[in-house]
Image 1 (tube, rainbow, N blue to C red):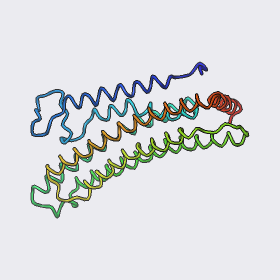
Image 2 (image 1 turned 180 degrees about the vertical axis):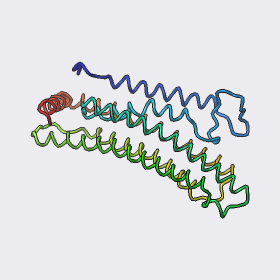
Image 3 (image 1 turned 30 degrees about the horizontal axis):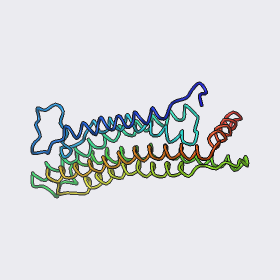
Image 4 (image 1 turned 45 degrees about the vertical axis):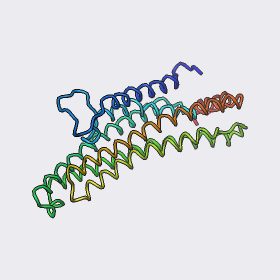
Length: 268
């Protein structure tokens, strides 16, 4: 419904899928094993080599729009709030690359200490300690941003759901909205869990070799690919199911929009 300041979620969904096809297809086309990698090759994807900047570019171009679509699924219409959540999600994603760079720096420092045959001094190294402090700080900041975003979404959803009850409106929230919120929250959280597990293992493992780091980077790359595709496809599927449910329910969509518009007008 056009109120003068509207957006088209289908265009956003198409952009999300287009970005996924472009970046995932590019990784498939440029994939190379570490032993076959060419340092002079401009476009080459070697997941076991280390942090991949372009992976986080893909997430920065898509995940803020996913947050907007999730918020729009239950008619969250506060433009500034939605913009701030999307921007916070973008900043959160960019911080993921910074965390990976600190993990790589920690790997490099511990490998150097191990190869110098001084494993007992690993945790006494000033460089290792400083990197670990930076890593913990960045992780805490990322968790704070993630908590703020999803706390707002869940609180606003609960408020909209309660408004239907308080106004004795016969309409109810379609179950697909709850499914979208729960699954997307779980999948978005899994990105942080994968990153946190990798960081903790890097911090508390003393015997780190180049082979160990290559294996860890390959594993997390696989996890990120699975989580990214799952989050995007589930959002597409859930949104289509939501629209189908709204069409099947007749005028639920119009009733809820009118109710929400009335509540926003009177300042609720």
